Length: 432
Ligand code: UD1
Image (tube, rainbow, N blue to C red; front, side):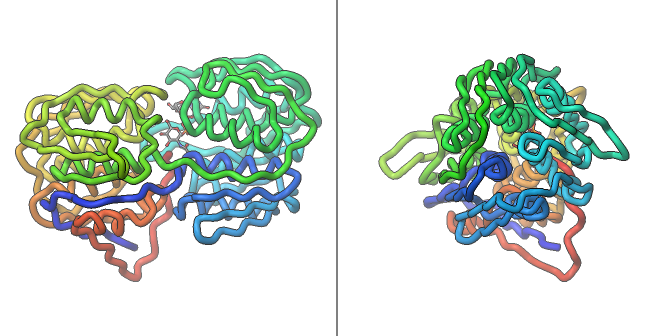
């Protein structure tokens, strides 16, 4: 099991390149199953999650080759309509294969994902969409079983209590593109990753209107073909490096930050007192902790402040003088990092989906436990800013979503080292 050992207190300086977006890649890999021929994806991040998804797709019968950030998916052998418990348990996004299974094979048997470290994770909206398109859905022995000799277009809403769902919108879209007739999806998610999927499906021959809007209109087609696509840079990785610069009082250039998708994050950094500026070489991010002010953050669906950046901002705000409030509206229990940050000297209280962060003058290094992907990132950031040594256990969480984060941070001067020992990794927890 790997650990990170971090010596804090070094302001980051230099230049960093952001990898392709994990959350954009995963649905595209599933969507490639819909084609009649091979698809090539470029700029695919080399992550535990993209490798897990490749295994899932291979298990279904498709051929996947992945080398040097290029992934070729040939769906010719896609015949298996079952995604077993052991796969879905490892990565919740495996559920993305359900749409392509129903659309192309007329059936699906997919292990029902349970809750995870950040709280309950229902899939009722996915199932609502599939059933509106004509699939018969049953839950049997922990599996969702869907049967649909033929899908037909329908009009329905995918809006839930916490707003729109990225996963349900993507999954149901992948089924609707091959359904007969017109489908109108109200309450669709507007995240850039959904727009990326729509652009990709269109390249495959799908007819979809309304990308980035609440209402999507799909006209079903008989078949889709393989295509080529370059994955957009990861807005959450870029945001994490921005916070790394801000929390260490550093000055970095991010080569390829997808700034068009990062308004909410960039404006919060400005509000706090860090600077983000477009320069000829890329995006410059710098700051001086002495000039920072507290702020309030409320997570919401895009273009609101992303829940996937909440933990990293909590690490930053823990060092900003004054009181900051963070409200988590997407996953109300997504605060496990608060207790670990407190072990490093932060002063954070969590109650009913709201964290009160009272800024402290310094954090001190400590052994801490990563509980989920973004929480781990927050602990790395805290470790970079803390006095002394921080040891982060269970870094397999971070390997799910950040490619070589320790090497990228080291190239910016951060003192981060990966230490391996012979104990096997623990089973992966379910999380975004
Ligand atoms: C995706 C991202 C994850 C991010 C999340 C919210 C991937 C692989 N993961 O997760 O990193 O944190 O979006 O931006 O892209 N919900 C329901 N019923 C459903 C589905 C969702 O009630 O059927 C609720 C969820 O519990 C949550 C909210 O809707 O409260 C948003 O979830 P959703 O957008 O679906 O998240 P994921 O697609 O799982």
